[in-house]
Length: 205
Image 1 (cartoon, rainbow, N blue to C red):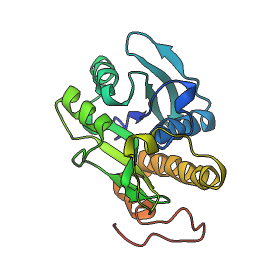
Image 2: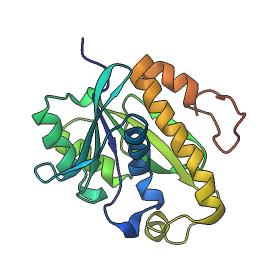
Image 3: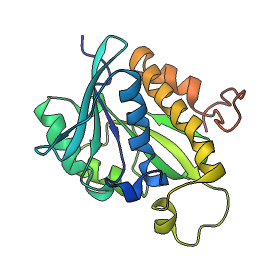
């Protein structure tokens, strides 16, 4: 029996200038998973991505970091999925979400892309929105004058320290989804405030 999730995609932009930016949280989460499970990303020119293979919960899982830049993420994801015969519903995409407060995660088996251009690209390339996505909150709770500048500017200091446990929690949520199913992971991680270490899930948000 095939696992429910076979491909985990972390969205972001390649290059040192984009490290630690809100838009690269997906990259950071799959990096954590690769480190935990002994995976090493190797650049695939064919698929325009970094790809690692790990074992999570006895399941072989491909981890991907598209190198196409965010707005063209589907150009990496769709060809790889078709080559590996991975169905859309076997894909989980981790990405930032400006409409979700910092400290929150939202795991869904499917949903619309909202305004996220990386998700829009994947949906268009796959011809389907039937893939899971884990959104990682980046809304600072204060007015943002220039959204593009905000998501492409590195976080440092206290904000950088705050995001580290959130990315760790996101990696935990993905492992739980692979090992116990999306429904169980959603009930355990959606609604939890990762800026409050002792908080419990407050139900669906």
